[in-house]
Image 1 (cartoon, helix red, strand yellow):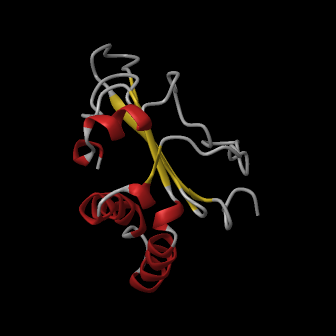
Image 2: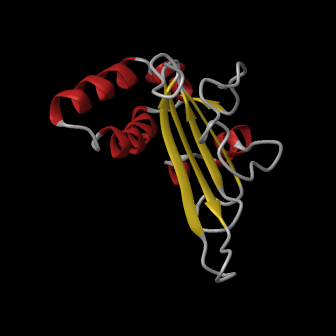
Length: 138
């Protein structure tokens, strides 16, 4: 998704400060930020939108077929009002790399964390939540 952006879009999508872990992770139910940042997906090409939707589908496909189709359809209908932002590298392999997909409903975060036991063993933290139907806030 990030590699499909041009240099101007990457500059707009780049977060101004590092995000060291998930914003709305465990025990942060319903604490979604009110301000959206990054690149508005509605301003991207159809090919770029498809890359964002493919990233979203990676998460919705974890559900059973009926629930997956419903969640994906909702997020797809809101794609033009969705934003993407990142920090670090676009490879998402280095400690400190972070990406956020933030829509009217969809909320997906990916944060690459450094190793604790093995210092060079980076590992991802990720969460998929829904601003309007968040499991933790209900």
